[in-house]
Length: 229
Image (cartoon, rainbow, N blue to C red; front, side, top):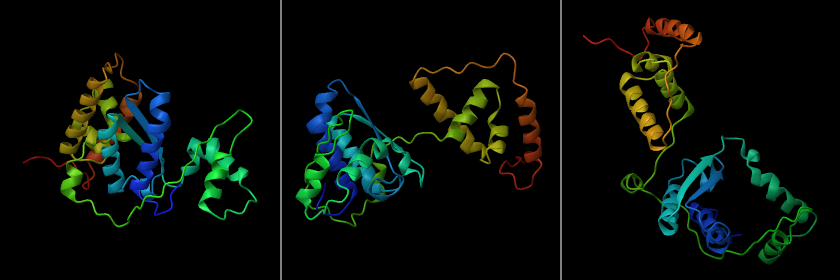
């Protein structure tokens, strides 16, 4: 629990303390860390300071850190809300929270019938707001963005039913160049993880509908696919 502002640096310091105090001992062979986070706030997917602090933590610990952000408005889907936060709320219900010490003690005293242990400590560090992260600094961070589902679907259609990049660009309202880049990125990612998507021996019946859809979209003057002269 902090006594200053809820910033990205504060959020990562909490994770750092957990890893140093509990995580490393509980998972001594771990090389990766998965974090589920809300879409906004100090750990939002658009927050540059959050990404900077993540990169620093990864460098300090040697862990490969992956962050999965819940869609906006769905933070209650995060399992920690039901496995931890709800029990903390019930534990301090009706108790006047008059000081930081009472907060920490109330959190640490939380348990469940199945024996959930909760550890809490006070973070008295100062976390200033308004920290600016420049474009150059962001560009230097070792970040890899995951592919979106539509990009993965485009790659599967390309590999599975042999749809060329041009009709795929029409289907996904993209440009030919962008689709080529997407397919290259997904193929590289699949190769890195030794994942093979074999071509279908018999194209599915849905392919006929896809081809018809491509013809309809290709005839649309607003299509992003332009014929060359």
